[in-house]
Image (cartoon, helix red, strand yellow):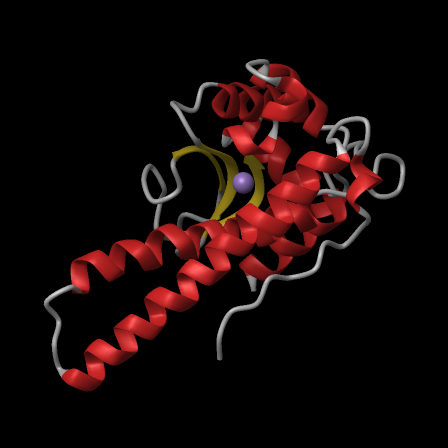
Length: 203
Ligand code: MN3
């Protein structure tokens, strides 16, 4: 089954003024779509390689699958991690997610500062990520600063909240002011979605 671009869960302009409609449209319809197409193309080539028993280009297509697959899956999380301000977006987490954040970071304030700093300081293109460490015995929240999106990750972790800081995510509105964009993102976080992801990861 080929991968498909998931529809945005809100209108292009719904995240204004923190994320402008034009950026959301280009980001979702063009950038995210390109990852979906790239992943499908790479998986098709790998299927053909298996059929032919010819793995000459397997390293190339493994990289393609990692690049486009991470791009597609992270963007799918990113859009659902956000919600219009005042309509599910912004505020603070509650319940089990809030308790886990307090346990692993000391306080929501400390967590927010660390994720902001980690995201702002990503070298080049990448993501700030809140992840759940899956292996029994680890079972804790982790903040990662993922460069590009194939590297600086932990393969056993499940991303719960991701902040996209590739330039396409903010440049039209914020230009080089990445920190301003990251601070604005906090007004859009859909904590209910993040909490549901933690619940699923813990099962
Ligand atoms: Mn992006």
